[in-house]
Length: 137
Image 1 (tube, rainbow, N blue to C red):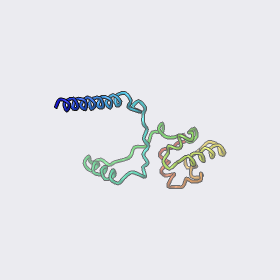
Image 2: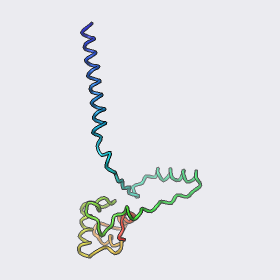
Image 3: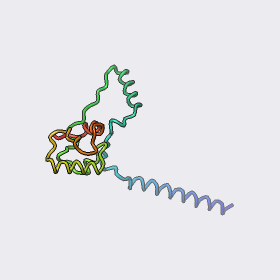
Image 4: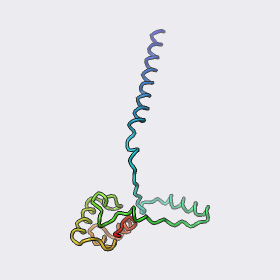
């Protein structure tokens, strides 16, 4: 009987130590909490559920929903962006980002955002998704 009591105490002590270790780890080693996170949302991938939800909210408030334009300060500038920055755009991967840089090097600075459609791999559909997120101004 006494041996079982000792065994239970050892198990309880081990459980307490494990809990303390987990709490300590979460308290001192939580990764990335001090770094801001920027989330880019592709408007073409928005689900219909959010549109339905917005419609219900609009009916409730009596107001019509109008999407707000992205401020120019948050847009990617086509004439100064590097490959890493271009790669964050919807529909742009490393290959297309490099083609944008090559185009800029060969033809000079972009004068209009529409010039993106001259780059191989960027058609009308991809351009429509990119347009709200890029600027040349």
